[in-house]
Amino acid sequence: MSKIICVLYDDPVTGCPDRYARGDLPNIDRYPDGPTLPTPKGIDFEPGTLLGSVSGERGLRKYLEANGHEFVVTSSKDGADSVLDRELHDAEIVVSQPFWPAYMTEERIAKAPKLKLIVTAGIGSDHTDLKAAVDHDITVAEVTCCNSNSVAEHVVMMALALVRNYLPSYQWVLKGGWNIADCVARSYDLEGMNVGTVAAGRIGLRVLRLLKPFDLKLHYMDRHRLPEALEKELGLTYHASLKSLSSVCDVVTLNCPLHPETENMVNAQSLKDFKRGAYLINTARGKLCDTDAVAAALESGRLAGYAGDVWYPQPAPADHVWRSMPHHGMTPHISGTSLSAQTRYAAGTREILECYFENRPIRDEYLIVQGGKLAGVGAHSYSVSEASKAAS
Ligand code: NDP
Image (cartoon, rainbow, N blue to C red; front, side, top):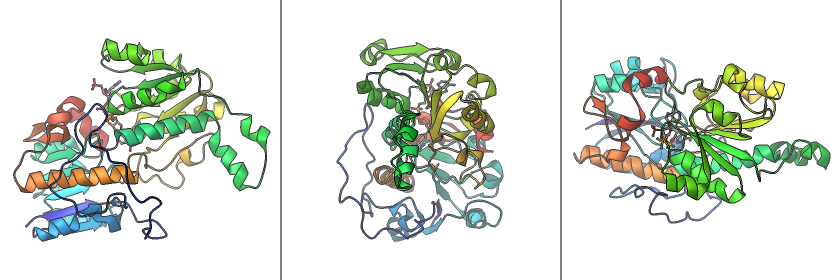
């Protein structure tokens, strides 16, 4: 028998819905340009329901208990008195998620001698100290691709919301006003703008594809160039540095992983290279940006708007400056956890657990660490020294 701890965000304050806004989800078999969706042997949940909050239990209880395992579900993850810390000592598996991250630090991993598997239900395992996972021979896996398109859609939504001044205009409606001039004094068209992504991986490339029909000038910066044919198809301009990209772009979107090379890449110095009145969108990780430098750039007008859904730490404290800075369109970390995405990563988590318990290989594209070293997709995206820093 194994003990599995699953850390999930809290239920809605009004309780889980007994009726959902929509009756079904579109049927998708493959990710764009990518592998198949998760293929577990079975699922015990209704697609399109809340699986990421505590009552949803990631749809795993029936399966795990039927196989004789102990299953602990909690949202209590921070501080020595947290349920996570209390239960960790004999846990074999921790299932966490980036939206409500169980920071699996070296200290926590050291306190869990039976820990064998950490599953990120989502993408981005920077909340786990990968060096500690390597040192303790713990497998780390994530559900690659499950929400890449969800995040890309969020980026497009935020670009339009910022450029067109949607959120303040909506507020005038709520206030009972008809203040057209107040609304449009900061409202522009996206058409014709220069829009650039920092990183053109799964999410960044999808953002570029989704934006193509808006008749924009598209730019990207990455460690590697995309194939020439793709650059031509999308009309992309490549930049070797953030400075080069930000000096020409009206909208910049960050879509790279967090590691020492990218941490704090947007700071007081690099913001000087941005065009006056640029919009910055960050759905990748909060630590890519210097918190106070972003707030100051919005105050000074260097940035005309900032939006995203990633913060540090998470949950963000009530007095986090990004809650009150001007011209922002922040959300909590939600872009990758739409009901559509939850269905996919719940199925992916189930697939990973089935493989683990049945001694079948976990898909390479899901693996971050295995056998005491970086593995699968993790061997490409991370280095062990990077990870320990990011998780702290
Ligand atoms: P991918 O691994 O597909 O793409 C990441 C890209 O970033 C790669 O092309 C990589 O290049 C590039 N890159 C790495 N370092 C740099 C650098 N220093 N400068 C420029 N480019 C760099 O990841 P995804 O697109 O799937 O996800 C990106 C990030 O988005 C995740 O790491 C995660 O932090 C975040 N995310 C956020 C979610 C949310 O809910 N808000 C959900 C999912 C992901 P190379 O190929 O050379 O390594």
